[in-house]
Amino acid sequence: MRASLLGRLLLIGVLLPSLSTLAAVPGWFGGSALHGVQADSGAFAQVSAGAYHTCAVRTDGALVCWGRGDYGQSTPPLGTFSQVSAGGYFTCGVRTDGTLACWAYDYYGQSTPPVGAFTQVSAGFNHTCAVRTDGALACWGWNDYGQSTPPRVEPIPTPPHPLGVGGAVVLPPGAIATESSVPAKSSGWPGGAYTMLVGTVVAIGIGGWYARRHWLH
Image 1 (cartoon, rainbow, N blue to C red):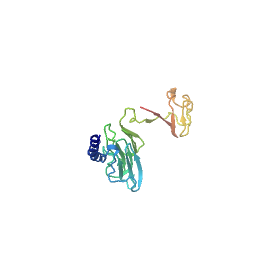
Image 2: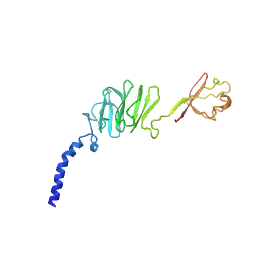
Image 3: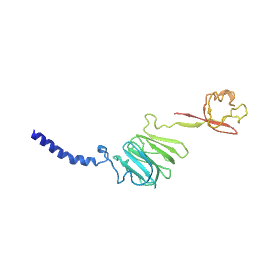
Image 4: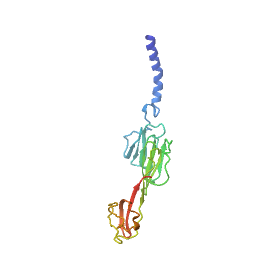
């Protein structure tokens, strides 16, 4: 009994220093990597909590991150940012010049952003989406469930007759154009070829009304 107890005590004495060393390594036992930054220090403009780490934009545009950092997700690049998004094991941010910066885990390409100017970015667990300055969406990364394939929005061509001519129906912006509100024979479209086109009216004026239709790839 004494020998067994002594052996257990000796084993604990051997393991404790190793466990203490591992606990200090980012990612082990949920250990954190603060990189010298306290979460509540300074003034911030925006914050994003990821799976195991958090990042925030200071009022001067600098980024700070804390939490798990075994892939480098808690080590932001230098520069000024307008927005940041912490993902699974990676992070993305919008720089003040509109370009995107992503870093850390990139197995699915989620940390390889497209070129261009953007206003907002959102990092998921293994994929990312962002809004371009012209309002278009861009997504990249893991796409097994179609999460990186954003919907398209395309305009329907203008009817050949101006408003009120040829029996065209006048609808205000924001109205929903349906088959019943825009019948084929009164829409001004010959042959009723566009009977089934529906959408939301976004503008009216000389030359006809415009609608747009949403659909997925």
